[in-house]
Image (cartoon, rainbow, N blue to C red; front, side):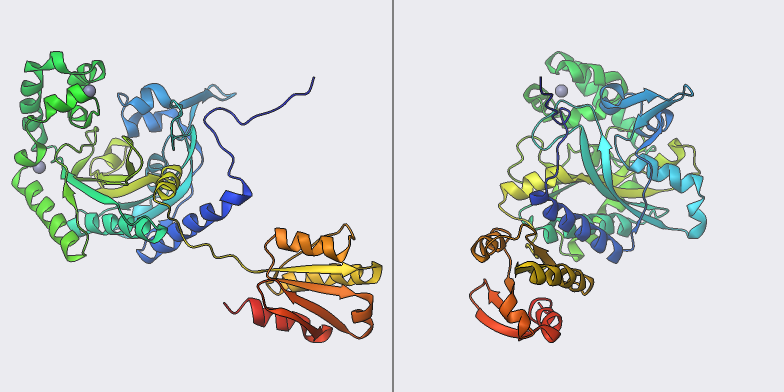
Amino acid sequence: MVLRYTAPKGTRDVLPSEAEIWQQLEGLFHSLAELYGYREIRTPIFERTELFLRGLGEVTDIVQKEMFTFTDRGGRSLTLRPELPAGTVRAFLEHNLAEEGPVCKFRYFGPAFRQERPQAGRYQQFTQYGVECFGSRDPASDAEVIDLAMAFLERAGLAAVELRLNSIGCPICRPAYRSRLLAYLTARVGELCPLCRERMEKNPLRILDCKSPSCRAVVAAAPLTVEHLCPACAEHFAAVKDYLTSLGRSFILAPHLVRGLDYYTNTVFEVVAPGLGAQDAVIGGGRYDGLIETCGGPPTPGVGFAGGLERLLLALAAAGAGPREKRVPLVFLAPLGAAPKELAVRLAHEMRTTGLRVDLDYRSRSLKAQLREADRQGARVVVILGEDELARGKAALKWLDGGGQEEIDLSVLVAYLREKTCSE
Ligand SMILES: [Zn+2]
Ligand SMILES: [Zn+2]
């Protein structure tokens, strides 16, 4: 019996044909975040389980149902990271990075793991990217983070996105709001979905953004966070909106947009893309002035965003968009005979060291077969090395992009090809 292996459910292979757009998006994210002053941090893909219990809150869906948790040989509980911010906070505290300056800005990009029911654009291993700005309470930092998120999506080729913005207040104004919300919801508890009935006690704010139609009908008339902000929170929210306007970033007020955890404060936002159905957010973020304290650090304000690369790819495909393909042109060497082949092997090495992208067919086939192979690989030019040409110190170039054929001295071949293909 032949055993056929397949990738585990909920995972995917990124094949060479797709890897290029992954590289482009990853490169774009890093270079853009660098311009905004966010430095890269890379943390382990697993952490001690307690970190996520604290950082994500024990009542969240992620912690209750979705974590890949295992026990190591020493009996310690470890978890594959379900998101990257928790590890970033842990590293920030462990290495006292706050000593480097009053404001620390990080970016991250890497795999994360959740045991979710697989659905479009959702995988059990997915790729999360995002930024964190620790140490600034200033509303200009909220605007900077949002501006970076929007700039990234724009440059990635996703033009028709919508920025949704809300404020959920702070530990001073939220308790009073929460009681009002609870009083309202208690009167209509029978109309809520089973999950939201559970949320009533631990996490009533999450009911506001429940997608179930019956809950949506209930919350349509619920009291709103923005109507119950304390003066400081109202001022912060107004300033964020002003900054965004002055940056030319339009937004839509989304009074039902919330983050469920207590450490979230003030600004919450998401960027939604058309074509993704109910799960339409490509980036989500906000301010979380209580997070670092929750994770055992000193009180430190924070604001950031995170997104999933697979969702972004889905949105780009739905929009028929994406970063422009920009590959280094391929030079294909076609030797005919034993001596030319030996030369071709050496030439390929030399050309590659100068930055040319070079390939050749080692099967010593006919010129016709080699030209066909060059065409299949999308080569720009074929360097034909025959015994005759070699004897005269020449090579024949055949330009496959319609540039005809020419003979070039072997002594200047590499320089000539560099000039013709690398100057774009
Ligand atoms: Zn407040
Ligand atoms: Zn619900």
